[in-house]
Image (cartoon, rainbow, N blue to C red; front, side, top):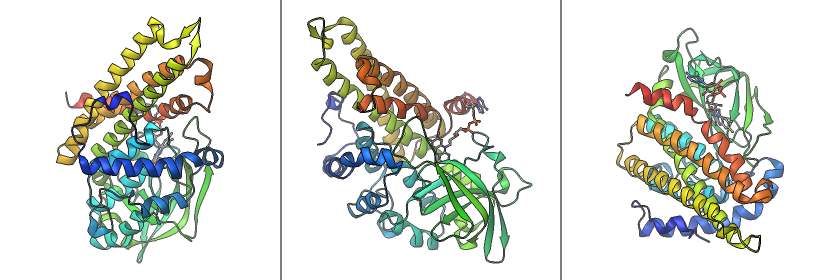
Length: 387
Ligand SMILES: Cc1cc2nc3c(=O)[nH]c(=O)nc-3n(C[C@H](O)[C@H](O)[C@H](O)COP(=O)(O)OP(=O)(O)OC[C@H]3O[C@@H](n4cnc5c(N)ncnc54)[C@H](O)[C@@H]3O)c2cc1C
């Protein structure tokens, strides 16, 4: 069923009738195809490829990619609707956000050949996208990456490894950040679009055992003398990697904030329902003044976050969201997400600590929101530079 919790008392100003129909279709798909499978996905640590194909067939992938490249031809609002419907239900295994960011690198920086060759297969779910930036010795300080891609004839020869890669196990296409001129910093960095099927020298390591996001196939990737056609160098020119990465930062950070506020909304709705049903000392938990005040605080924090995120969504659609504002949203909303989820767990008592309860899983999922996509400390660093 579509979400009809109390937070929907505020209808986002960017919603319209077409998006409402799209939201209904997305939530029906999520309820029938994803929710019943989540338990087995958590056990196997990935969602499998079939659901990606089904999502593609249903028109839920690459919603903001132009139709001429096989996409749905919508805009960021369509993506936001999907992230919201997943996050409100605590479904963090299906790495749609990273898939969309990977597609965006192609849309914004790819050559026409790359767009036509790769995007339709991403939209159909045949190719699942990943982004390979982080390495064991380089996370926040991305200039320190060591994965090299050295030109040899019509190929690049890639050596190195990546860690913490979302969709890493299932992925068929990795936007891989490499050094094409290892002696240089940012200027020596490029992005290779690496197709992984039957790729000699490429190996997926462990699916990592995480605190939360149990059904997400976050993995290690290894490259040993892997030959990637030079035709897959993003944009066709070396040394543009950092510039290409920077261009999409507002999109990525807004996306994380959308997920954050939707998780807050979902958890709050669930908690309100729970405290009304649960009894202690002869009355419902909801009747204690502490519960009422806590819920009032959570609803207020959630509403403020929603207003800010709605503004960011509208500005992405208008093409005016700047990196500093997006960094503010990423840092503040995800900090708030964790505060809200912590209180939701507390109001559930011992049940809030049990994985079978939604707020427990959402609490564990929330923690990483402050770490990935650039840590919240890095967000503050960026914001402070603009002041
Ligand atoms: C579940 C999950 C999924 C992920 N998905 C992806 C993915 O798909 N692709 C990908 O490439 N990466 C991914 N990452 C990696 C993630 O982006 C990095 O973990 C993150 O950027 C931090 O890098 P790090 O882990 O190396 O920490 P470090 O950079 O070592 O940071 C450690 C601590 O130092 C702080 N710190 C670092 N520099 C500064 C500074 N200048 N000022 C103040 N404090 C600082 C950090 O904020 C942090 O608190 C994922 C991580 C996780 C956990």
